[in-house]
Amino acid sequence: MPNPSRLRAAALTATALVLSGLLAGCGGGSQEDDEDLTGQKLDWKDCPAPSEAEGGGAAPSPLPDGDEWQCATMRAPLDWDDPEGDTIGLALIRAEASGAADRRIGSLVFNFGGPGGSGVTTLPAFGQDYAKLRTRYDLVSFDPRGVGRSDPVECLDDKQLDTYFQQDATPDDQAERTDLVDNTEKFNAACEKNSKKILPHVRTTDAARDMDLMRQVLGDDQLHYFGISYGTELGGVYAHLFPRHVGRAVFDAVVDPTQTAEQSSLGQAKGFQLALDNFAEDCVSKTEDCPVGDTAEDVKTRIARLLKDLDRKPIPGVFPRELTETAATGGIAQALYSKDFWEYLTEGLEQAYDGDGRVLMVLSDALNGRNEDGEYSNITAANVAINCADDKPRYDPAYVEGKLPEFRDASPLFGDYLAWSMLSCTDWPVAGAADHPDVSAPGAPPILVIGNTGDPATPYEGAGRMVDALGKGVGVELTYKGQGHGAYDSKNRCVQDAVHGYLLDGRVPAAGTVCS
Image (cartoon, rainbow, N blue to C red):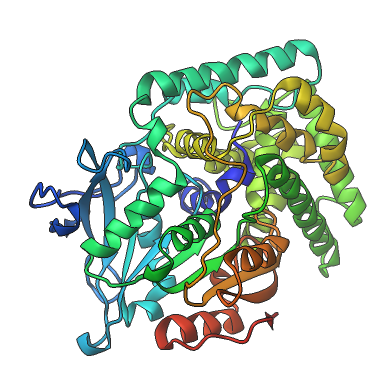
């Protein structure tokens, strides 16, 4: 089962891309195989259509001003402990700065989260949102190692994934628990069989070292960076490893760097429950009748009843698949990533109460990286691989069962779903690196850290803890009183003015600034 606490911003991106189709890539290598990889020259070319691992679809459309997106492949060491050994190719994409050459600052590198999200497909999908930043930066993103075109982790095939995502991920008895454990073991064994070479080398520290190589290959003295969701964790690890190379950096939808995998999952249970509460309150507060409940409590009671009914008897979803309890829970969680998707949640619930599970299943498919052709991106495989390589703790079924009361207290709806997802790394073939990442960055310049009070996937408290962990004089916290995962893409004027002021003009907002 995919864990929404581990998909974070990538899940939001997937929803926008998949819903656009269901509800209504990079070519070229480096020109030289230089032993010193910092001296390689990137061969920028027009971008091809995304690969299946990147999510498929058409090649990126030209930018509003007619400029084309450009793609290239950067070579990096497979094993950073053996930098002169085998290399892998990392897929990059860029839009060159649109403003005057003498005003160009450098490259602005984006990571949109996941872990496991393809930056090569995400950046052009939302490129117009960053048009102002493009006036002074080349906009750059990439598929991190193990993701998309960058030596993707491969586990189950498409048909096997359809079956895998139909399983009961919230077991009620011993037989269902055994099935869940068996299916997790089969998934992990397939990852080891198909991707054994790359699995030990997809840690966040590896990706951070890739970004410092990228900085040098792009010709920048400092890394200017915009990290969203898991991208904030990656940015924090980069700042820890290379504090003197940090340029202007923004962290949005901030991962709490002080938490273990268990604490993160429990925090997510609380966060998604808060988002559900807010959705229910919003629905019944509108002038027209809320179609999925008379009161906020009624909305949540009816959802809980729907899930129990689906556990006993699924309903038709996207033919030939059925909407199960697990798929419906994932679809609901997916819609809570953005207030813009609440209308889809209302529609999906209303239809499901009438026996039609298509909309909720489309939302669930977006969470899992499945497109309308039945092909899956490798976001789930990469997500598990990166998290399990990073996270040291391993949890067994008995431990999870003991934690169920605490998770259910945090969220009656999402508690079981998130608790059982902790089994994903239990028998992973690569040992996890640490309990949590080290992001202490003494000597780094100011990093703008933005927390959203209504964020379900990266709860607001994580922003303050990131500021503390970065160290005195580094993290500068800004609070956005809003809904959804992240703040900048809410288009809130106050938030965007603060980000633009810092990235474009170097003006650091006052610590403790609040936007609403």
